[in-house]
Length: 198
Image (cartoon, rainbow, N blue to C red; front, side):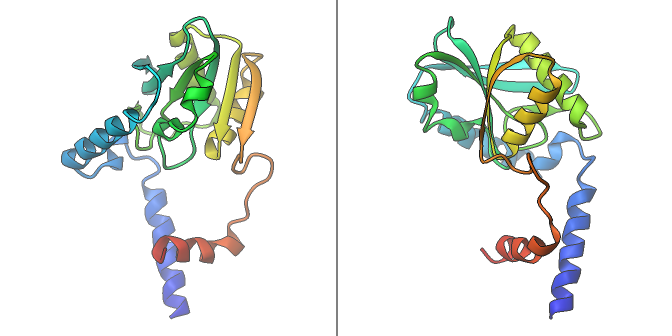
């Protein structure tokens, strides 16, 4: 039984890595599932207790979707969400962030959300910096206060290190794999059990 479980884990990992170079539409297996997700996304935005606007920024990697709130003359605060969620995760905090900051919540590429990746290969670290630069240029923002949580914390750190002074302040909330790699070997069995038998 144990060997069967390990074999299943290997197939799971291989199957997931086969999606590495898949286009953006791999997220949804049908148009109806995508429409259902987008309806849920829009319903989640109705939970936001502040006025907001949605903006799509064309980049060389596809379209970046940004939800914007707060005073137009406020300092820019960019929010980078964690893995497997979208910018809608910020609704419990958006009211306090939007009091003084002009808030830009960006949906990450290649995940559920409204950003659309139209490339073939997953962007590398330098390309992610380029993607964010293109977004910030499109929004015409400089001296950015950057807040990232979980994988968004890693993305924020990567950007801050390579952005040549564009970041004014960096705030990290439980940043995943940012300061040390997470060894997968001892955790693989626990992770597989959690995914298979929640």
